[in-house]
Image 1 (cartoon, rainbow, N blue to C red):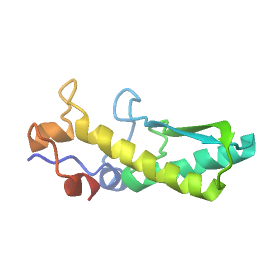
Image 2 (image 1 turned 135 degrees about the horizontal axis):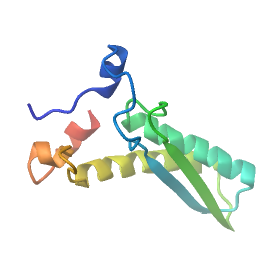
Image 3 (image 1 turned 180 degrees about the horizontal axis):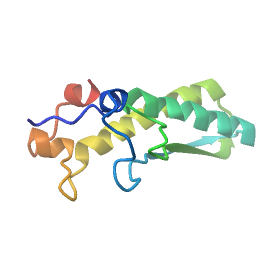
Image 4 (image 1 turned 90 degrees about the vertical axis):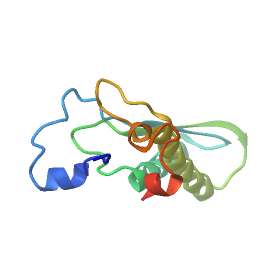
Length: 128
């Protein structure tokens, strides 16, 4: 009691044949920077931002969801593309964890804080 199903394990065991009801398992993220990047570079930042989703969501990018990362750059300062992408991925991961920790259950589906008490799960529990 008090635990979430391991969605990836359930899928691998053949216990999940279709989407989990209405397709509502989408995670949206935005990586915004003040760097002066071209369209191609901003696309790379978005691609790297997907690493943040993969670090904290399993499964991610299945046919059951619409996980996506958008990126934008305001063009104010020079910056290293790889550094911005790496930091962006770390920020996406942290944002997803914060969202999961602060969410409340809805429609009979419990959230992490509902299972761990009002204080929510410890950081180590959510990241494990």
